[in-house]
Length: 82
Image (tube, rainbow, N blue to C red; front, top):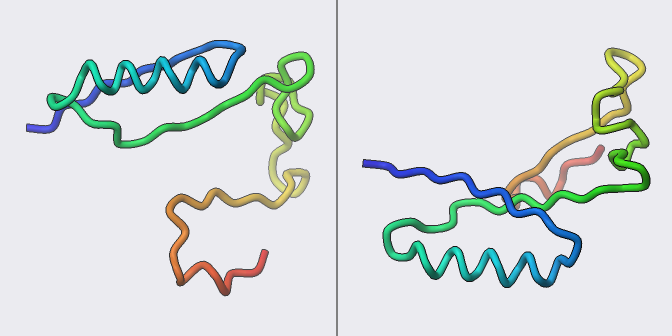
């Protein structure tokens, strides 16, 4: 049976967040293992890197900039040109 647990750590010091996440991982092992870690950040006054506030002002359709999300890039993606 698969077991899932989501954990959201927030803080200013990224080094401290790494130490906290490792402590949580150690405390929950071997019952649970880390499947994925997603880092996020705050930019300027709570804007994303495209300059949109909280990601809520995302342009739609033709106004949207081209983008891609690549997870676990393998050899097939080396020839990909954006």
